[in-house]
Image (cartoon, rainbow, N blue to C red; front, top):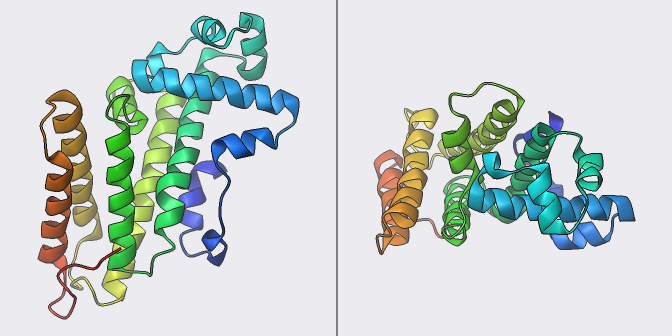
Length: 233
């Protein structure tokens, strides 16, 4: 459970300015057994992005990777553990691509804007596959169990990080002191859900600009008069 709280614990850590290895670089540095597991996870993540977490199976993954079912099973033990491992791997990559680079920005609106902008970019490259946070919520919203718990925990960790960035902007005097951080977070998250829906399902053009414009409107609503209308990344 500790892994999913990396975002929250690390939001003010100076060490985050250091470069983080890519998943491929990290995999090459592992012992052979762990390299095999990383390769299976990579294939499983690609499969889940297109077919959903429920589309994962030991047999299908064995076929994709050219391994035996027993070989794949030895690394995960069950389909449920495979699904949870994929969620954790997705969360780890989300941190590397969105969270860690964004928090190098100064506290306040620059950091909040960077978190949102990198989130938008992440969603934009997932349009041909799918966001596991979003698709997984649809699959497991009414299905209690360890997989749902793992997914919800990862999403909450990300939301906690965004809420913390909002609170820091309030403390910095850039957002009004009466700003409700959870309400602002709710509105920002709504933009991402609308972006994913209109771009992936309806194939509407220009939705990235609409999401960014929506973010500007939200910030303008909550910002203090002394804060600039736009704070660049």
